[in-house]
Image (tube, rainbow, N blue to C red):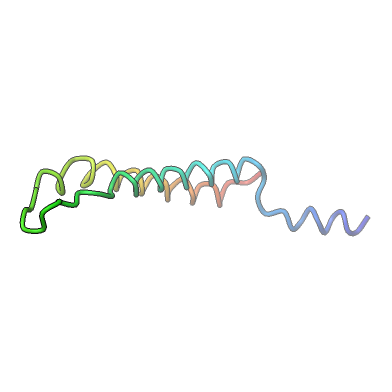
Length: 79
């Protein structure tokens, strides 16, 4: 009987916590993938529209920050 109570006290996170953690990790991953790229085939050519696009400068960082916020929520959420 004492081992049951000990096992229960070691469960820090429930199923919903892990689900939220996966959602946060997915947001971070999508943000990183959206930020990647922009390489030019010719190293002497710089395409500013490609590098400084809305996707890379605005959307991707917002998704990454949102993912970290979801991760913090998942850690502090009580099950």
